[in-house]
Image 1 (cartoon, rainbow, N blue to C red):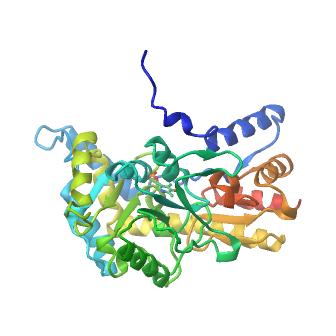
Image 2: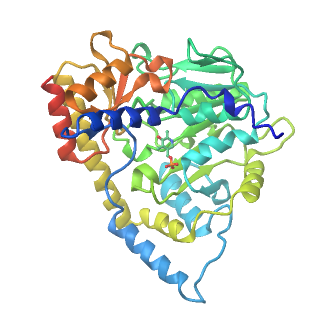
Image 3: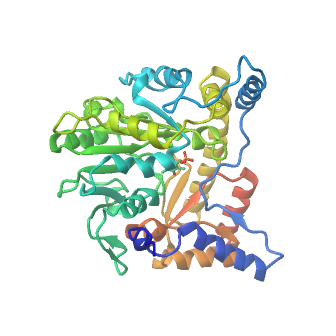
Length: 405
Ligand SMILES: *Cc1c(COP(=O)(O)O)cnc(C)c1O
C-alpha cells in the first residue's frame, strides 16, 4: 500500500480562513436578514485598472495571429518584464539588481512557499510571530520544523521572533542564529514596518552569520512614510544575503490574474560557491513553465505612467479605508496600529478577550468579520486584524457599527 507524505499530516488543524468561512456561513444561515460586512480576508475588490485591461486585450489579440502567437513562455520570465522590473522598481531606489536575477512567477504565495526547497533539509528557519502562515506550513511539509506543541502552538525546530506591543510589532535579532530568516514588511498581519536602518541591522546580522533573509515585500506599494525601505536592496550588503519576493496582487489587483517575481542576487553563495540563483533557475526550469504571456504584458503595463497613476489611485482608495478604520477604532477607545504603510489594521482586543472570542463578539453584535490574531501565531493572541480592501461604504458602515457597540 502507498504511504502519504507523513510531513503533511503534521500540519495542525484546519486552515484559518476555512474556519472563519464556516463560522460566517453558519451565522448567516441562522440570521438570513443580517448584512455581514467582511473586513477579514486579504483580497482586493477594485477591478483591474483600464491600462492593465487594455494590455490584456492587446496581448489576447496577439495570440490570435500566427505571426504574434506565443507558446510556452520562457520559464524565468520574458525579458520585457524582467528588464522593466529592474528599470522601474530597482533603479529608482539606487538598488543594484540585474534582469537575470529576477524570476517571474505566478505569485508570491507560491514563491514564498517554494523557496525553502533550495535549502538543505536541516536548515533552521526563523519567523516572526505572528506570521503569514505560508512560511511555516511549507517548511512543515518539507519536514524541517520538528514537533508541534498544541499547547503553545509552536514547532520545536523553528526560531520564533515575537512581534508584540512591547517591541512595536518589530522582531528583534534572534540570539540563536537561524540559517534562513523570513521577514515581511510592510507586515501581514500587523501592518507594521521597520526603518531602513533597522533593516540594515538585519542585513548586517545575516552577512555576519551566514544567514539568508527571505524578504516578502508584497505590500511595498502601500508605504507612505519616508524612512520605510521599499526594497531590502536599499541596504548595503543585501546582495550577499537577501532574496526579495514581490507580487502584483496587492499593488495592482492581480490576485485573480496571478503574477509575481522573486529576486535572487548571484552574490548569495554557499561555502562551496554554489549560488542560490542557479538552484532557483534549475528549480524553475524543472517545475515551472512560465507565467502566461498575456499576464506578463499586463504586469509590464502596471509600470507605465498611466498604470502607475491608476494603480496608485486604487491604493489611495484602500488607504482611505485604512485611515477610517484606524481613526474610528481609536476614537472608540481601541488600541490600534498598522494602517499607515499597509492595508492592515492590527488592534488589541478589549477587556483581555481572546482573539476568537472577539471574532464571535464582532460577528454576532456588529455582523463584521475580521481575522483573529491568534490564527497567525501565539503572539497574535489578544489581537485582531481588519483589512482595508472593502468598499469605502461598507468600511464606513462596519466601523460605525463597531463604534456603536
Ligand atoms: C497577499 C500576500 C502575498 C501575495 O500572494 P500572491 O500569491 O502574489 O497573490 C504574499 N505575501 C504576503 C505576506 C501576502 O499577504
